[in-house]
Length: 144
Picture 1 (cartoon, rainbow, N blue to C red):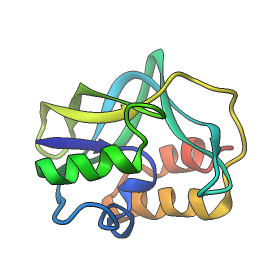
Picture 2 (cartoon, one colour):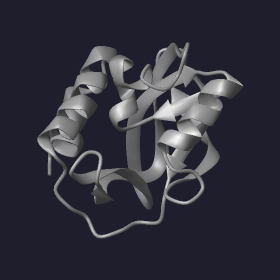
Picture 3 (cartoon, rainbow, N blue to C red):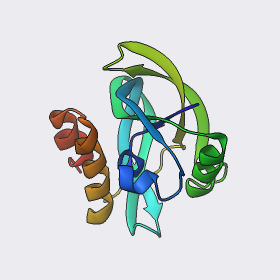
């Protein structure tokens, strides 16, 4: 099964904290969603990544192939189903030039806020590791 990471789990180091053997598949994007930092995470000390429906926008991220055990571990990490919801969504794989279905975690939008520097650094590190476009990194991940 596939998982689309758009926040801290884009980082190989971060995703491996909870997933035993995630396999990088490609970078990709989803349409008609917007990346935001909202809510508040006690663990990170600030707002955290979320995606909210927004016609005409795209969200870039990293696609991993994961096991059922990895999905269960991600459910715990993301607080599913209380904090984040999980759904299957269509993701366009850039280098493979195809669409796939992947799980993504998202929640109802909350007031936007300032993320902790460590959290942003983790998101940016993962995006750069995998070649997410620089303008997206600058404008969305670092644009708070």
